[in-house]
Image (cartoon, one colour):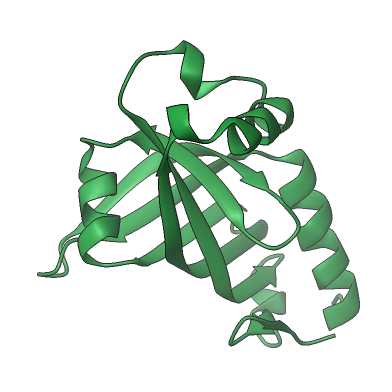
Length: 146
């Protein structure tokens, strides 16, 4: 079993390398919605891009709570986050440049109506299989545990 410091290091390495994640949001009635997203870890927050008219965008506007996940049960990262900011892609040149450099595509080039959503993690869990379920928290209340 990995200790918390090793799990944190593994999470940071995965977020910096792996940009394809699953994002779950919910409307105010609690009906969940799940999509695949590209995400840029800027060292503090996850930046995702989706169209402003999408169900995900509408959900985040009404209910800023989100859950992001990557991996399989043999090596999983689960992030509970709050959407703290949204911006139109065309008004966010610096974000767009960072996002494009990190994930390999630029939403400014795929059409109109795209938005960036900044997700601030408040809980991050990391586990490799059922043996690591205990001690899986590496962040609580937006603070790293190590």
